[in-house]
Image 1 (tube, rainbow, N blue to C red):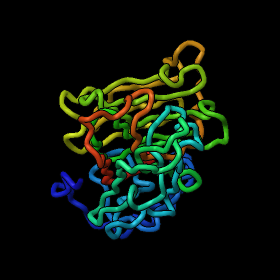
Image 2: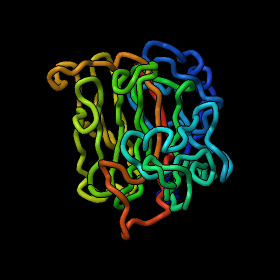
Image 3: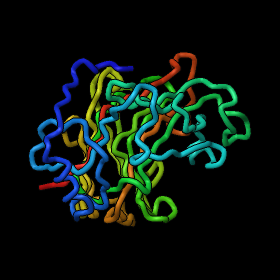
Length: 296
């Protein structure tokens, strides 16, 4: 799971950075971003941006992610298969979501008979993890990005995304999918926005073609969120931009509000389809870091 780890260089935190973070928390550029308890590394050069918050996933091997940053979505049947007829049961167990002790978060989907009740009334055949920063860390504007290595395979569906923090029914509060990947299109990742008039299969999205399997290596998936604008990037390359003027006809712009973050690894569902005999389990999504920046 730790492929690519040898190339990661972690620099010591500047002594001034914690104080800078404290000053920037809650400012207009970063929404209601919460300061980290401690940052273990500074990001690589990111001209024009100031780091507000990060999780570098440093901690003992087998430990849970930082509870000051992340909570859990749990279950399957309780949420109707998460609206997509998914086949995994989400747990809060470190069997499925854990730090590897080398600076990476692992979300693992595995075959687990009777993992929990699925939407179809039968036991789920898989367990996995879904963590979210709801009630802990949010952003309104800025750059949000994560360095992720996705697993491949038919029926595998990892994602890095965000939902509006308002207590509104989906999609009225908005959804921004920073990265979605489905194993049946191995060379492609997707960036999409969902709101009233453009949701589900009709979301306002675009694909990014890597010309090779996305699962071969780590990639940085980002959005830049400004008033009336969202930009999607992969490894610093812009591939999708959305404004109120480019929404589908009749669509409502609902993105001028705080959003929280979600990392998950789904199995099956309406879009990816079910795993088959070629799908390798356990499937593991590896996350090096997640960061939120304020634009200077």
